[in-house]
Length: 313
Image (cartoon, rainbow, N blue to C red; front, side, top):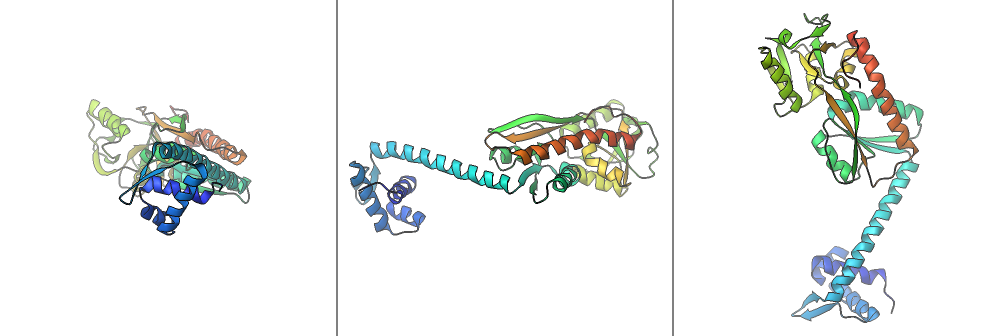
């Protein structure tokens, strides 16, 4: 008798769950069928794989060695299936992207529109997550590209700096500082201020510069999301300091004013790419569009402020 997939499947199930009854549930078959497959496997390879004691199956050393090889084979098969699925996705024209909310609404949405305009019939899987979650998603090889606001390391992920820019002061339309060439921390003393949450690293630096010059803005809202800050500034709730990636679309729509801020708070965005997920022409095309748009943002910020930005996107 030759070894077949049914025998190997039964053996693997028993080794994984411990009993023939549990293995039968996993395989959606009968317990007698699992037992018969195990006996046939032992007969085919002329080895005893289990000791039978009081109705229990106890794996022999040979069974444990065989199981290791079976698992290696299954892992290779799953990897091959995943690779074939990825090839199909690339052939059908799909790009997967995950990024934080501050990038998804404006920057990534604009890049995606440009990509789809040049690649008819393609589609994009775009997911929004907090930066702390993105590295794990990329480590699972779920997306072609990930963008995170802060550097995060993860196994199976290639991480590089995508951009480094300074933050800007954003103001409601008609604010007394909206015509200033540059806004200083002391200018915001007593102003209603919308702040990032207290556990945000940039928030710590902003608070320190306010303290250094004796300025005390009135914090009226704290939020973890830059797009919420921009929305509130647009509604006249207060002022704030954010990355141009979050603020530019609001400024270009005439909802807020962007002004240069005297204190340089570098804002770094990292690019994450999976090391075990193949990249095709469509993925590289999408990345090129994103990089071109990143470089274009500096010129657009310059037009909105009337000044060269202190940082380069």
